[in-house]
Amino acid sequence: MKFKAIGVSNYRNIKLARLNLDADRVFLLGRNGQGKTNLLEAIGYVTSLRAFRARENEILLGPESGQAEIVYEIEHEEFEDSEARVLIKRKGKEVSLDGEAVRRASDFVGRFPAVTLSSEDLNIVRGSPGGRRRFIDTFLCGIDREYYVALQRYQKCVQERNALLKRGSSMELMRPFEAELIGPALAVIRKRDSVISELGSMASRFYETLSGSAEAIGVDYKPNAYPDDEDAYRAMLDRNRKRDEIMHSTSKGPHRDDFELTLNGRSATDFASDGQQRSIALSLAFATIAYWRERFGVCPALLIDDVLGELDPVRRERFWNALDESIQLIATGTELPDAASGKEWLVYRVEDGVFVKE
Image 1 (spheres, rainbow, N blue to C red):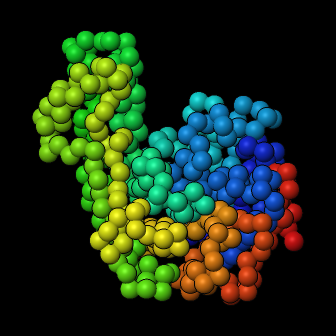
Image 2 (cartoon, one colour; image 1 turned 180 degrees about the vertical axis):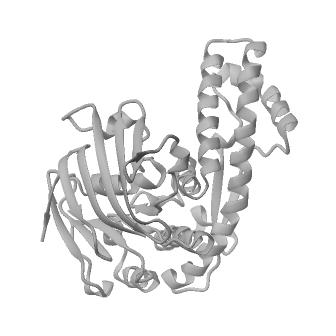
């Protein structure tokens, strides 16, 4: 898959921009705070209809109006040339594909895959459980539409249950909401369990190239709770009800899951060096690309935000060696890539939300 062009209006600090992206390597060059990451975020939005730095639509809207628009021209292995349009509003969004309205977001999510790796993702090993959940959820929402639907339903149900807990509602009133919560919760848990270990195996293949060592990495799912069925989940909610009533929040469920990254069987959080942790993060990104290619026959674009500058020269060279030349790479940074990248770049200089081709 390749992005051929993008048009953006009123997205964060980008008033209006249209960029030709029809190249294997595209670089957005400029000082920090000029809009490089905003455009990269807009490009990646098409995959899961989620922004990798924001949860609320309001944050994405610029000052010009109450909505933002992104138009994509995309070349795809299965769908050939397509035009996708996303209109982001304060509440909700509208999506169309080749001029036809998309009625359900789940019918669109994952159609145009892009893998995003930011400088924040390089800290995934030592970062918060929430950051690791966002990483895996973004990936799973892209590859599995049923997961996307289940996660959306589960998150909404948890919000509703928490609101009832804050109001001191009775168990009888909460039961119907809990009944709606259990099915999607189990779907989320089971999908995470089935995919995370496989992703770890794929990441190990890339780690040797990126690190220059034969150390083995692992990705282990650490569910907050893993009930076998609906009855067990219901019993778990009952066991924790008193605590939840005191804390005014739901203490057990996949919204509190984590996954542990290991190096030679030991916690990478505790034992891996900064360089090793960066190599693990890069390995995970390459693993998600490999998963797409091997399972679905589609090669995602790779979007990397201010990552290359954070790698030492040796790891940067290993990154280029691991990167398949057929993958479209769109990157940002304050300095141009070094000669080790091995390809010519289509470069846009970015200043105050304006993009000028060099």
